[in-house]
Length: 227
Image (cartoon, rainbow, N blue to C red):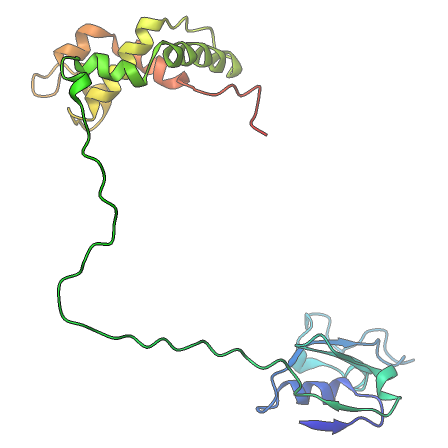
């Protein structure tokens, strides 16, 4: 749509362009203050119109505007007065996606992955499950759990729980066991009913002590947030 702009473009005309079916390139319309009226203080007759575009006054519709196009070109009263021609529909062409042609073939899907070396666990053949576990969760990790759990309790303004190294190991073991001995909740391991209780857990730690450890179990120092 090519137009010759020989005068100010009003808000009314800009809206007609924006709503035209063959034109969708306007991204914003900036309007100047309407002409001053000695009869009315407001821009419209109602106080609760809340910027309703269907309730604009005649003064507002006659106000000069500036149009911003999709390609960031702006048309306002200054450029209009220069008497230039503007191609309102000028915009960058859309880049079409390259169509991919597939060639289909019958047959089984061939794996293109690498062949990994079979694992060798011979070095751990004589190790107990606890020994294998402690290769990953060594003394340093357990001591870190003890220190940070006690720090977190103080951080929460709670009394020092005085958690020991052995208690942390026991609590971690109960957590691992709970993944195999599934119950509605961990506390049911201390239940008095035979179909729910777990004697191994009951004999290793009291329920209240376990819940206290879980309340403050922590791995990071909250006084030293990560940057």
